[in-house]
Image (cartoon, rainbow, N blue to C red):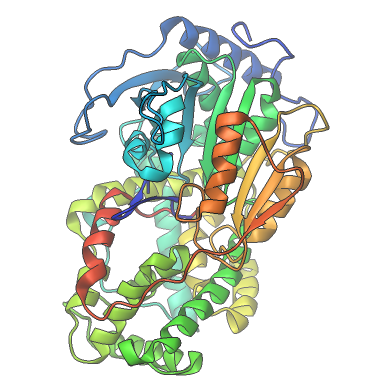
Length: 554
């Protein structure tokens, strides 16, 4: 899943994130299915004690970490063990960014807001960096939170300069144009199998056997070391998308270390769905969001001319695919690039106008808008390759995957009959996990009982495709005392800090006052996007795309 969004008034900004333990018990739950061993628990305690003693020496940000940050934003590093079972072995450094609490009440300039500590944010992925999160303090919807909290972003292990992973030479990462067959032939399947095997081998060849330690359990342990390095006895954390998954693991492993936790656009933590089945769920959900997008285009046929019904819009899309298969737009945009750029509309409905505009312009003789949106950019290849490597390593390491392609073929063939839009492209992206050459873990069976954990705020959009709504329901069942706030009949991936005042009211009440609704709450949906007949949305999305983590699916 791609990272969740933080919106600004002018458009949107994507942040595309027990020696020293508090009283209340040691972390972890040995004996639970998938639970980490005692060696990792001891190693975490050692790393936490060291981090608390060392702290973080914040200074100017390197351009590679955060180019041109505003005044007050500083960067540093925190050291964690590669392998928590061997805390005295190889160490890696994670990059961290911070904007101190402003203490300024945006509604009362005379009031000095007391600091509540650090708010750590992760935007998802796996493979997305949260280094941009401190910039959220300039966004109107975040100013009250930024007044009370130091805003902390970081690049998880493997991402950016945090002991980066790589699986292929970035110069060869972008392949364009590419096909995207709805009904792949046997020859095409054999080709993709060969590519998946080569990619999996490349991950180990380029990153070494250490790649096995890039997983969600270690991301949760890293979070506890970061907490200690920041000088926090208990963690205040907001995770979006994939960030909700290792945030949930953290809550189960270190319940007494949690102060407040917001989980936005929740991944289903059921061990049976990590990760093979959750990707099938995601593909089915994207079919519904694709239908939502087509319905919206049809309602604005006077603007886009792509058809006055959903079926007619589908025919327009199919026509574009056929033309691009015959001749790539700009030499770089084929059916694969078309599918990918329209898939982003399934994540964020504020992308709908530009995607509809690009499809319309292409079918009416102007390929320019489509090429600008969909053609790979060589300048982003290294970032995209790194993000893809982390995504693959974490998901492949986290859980068992089917190793017989016949299982993948059966399941995705069946699903593609009713959900053709994303099914096979999603399968190809994850297929290296069938041939992953390092040991897999068993997912942690997350469950907390009453009183084990402070109240957790869960946010979800009812029609989210990247993190289907069932995941939020399952998460709230597993974390006792958690409360769900639903944005009804909406599908944007990542709802906290967006344009919905109702959602933001719950977010602020929780982070600033510790209040949650008495029971699960719901909010009316945000307004639908306004259609754009010309290039009016291009600038806004260029700013957003410039900041988002590339290549992440969750």
